[in-house]
Each structure stands twice: as C-alpha cells, then as structure tokens.
Image (cartoon, rainbow, N blue to C red):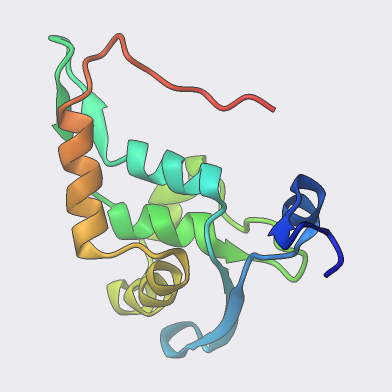
Amino acid sequence: MSGTNGGYATKDLILSVKDLKSEDVFVEEWGATVRVQELRGSERGAFEASLSNISAKGDAQPDIRNMRVRLCAMCIVDESGNRLFNDTELGKLGSKSARALQTVYEVAARLSGVSDDSVEEAVGESEAIPQDESSSLSA
C-alpha cells in the first residue's frame, strides 16, 4: 500500500490526504447555494475555546451566545475552501435569517462532528481549566 509503513499510514501520507469534506447546500431564504466545509482540527479547537470566556477572577464562564453563527462563519467557504466570513463579521452574519443559519449550521455541525453533547463537553472542560493553563499549536 502506497504511503504506508508496514500497513500503517506514514506522516507524509496523512499530511498529503485531502480529507476535508464539504457539501453544497441550497438555502431557501437566500435563494442561493452555499458551500459548507467541515472544520479543520485546529479550527475545531478554536470553536470549542470560543464557547467560554475567562472572567476577571480567572474562572471560565460558558458563552454559547451566537454559537451557531460562529460555526456557520467558520464553515461557509468559497469554491477554493476559503472562508467567506471572518471573525469580525459575526454580527453581520448573525443579522441574517435564523432559519437560514440553522440550515447551514445543521450541515456544518454534522460534517464537523459537533453535537449538543460535544458542545456541553467543551463548555464543561473549559470550566475546569484554570486561567494560567493554556495550549498552543506549533508547526
């Protein structure tokens, strides 16, 4: 098997595979089709981190306001896979039809493995992490 080492995937194989799934979704309220792409691993982490804020006391507080809009903004992409909405445009996207956003959210959540349980778990984990503990991704 190409790209394997004794039947196991190699680093080069894993990094070369185009594994992001996308789905074109017709949004009736917008009269248009949008491309919805699943989150990358690092984007999933950023999405989960956005579900809580650190208070002045250093406690993590759940913040699921606009959770659906955040996920939609992260997953609506152009034909090349580039996001159409950046983080500063959440308010603009959030002003659109809740029904339209729900249509996109359901596909984005399914493709990205985001469920009510995973959101509750992410919020619960963030409450258990002290402020001085953080993680970062390195290349």
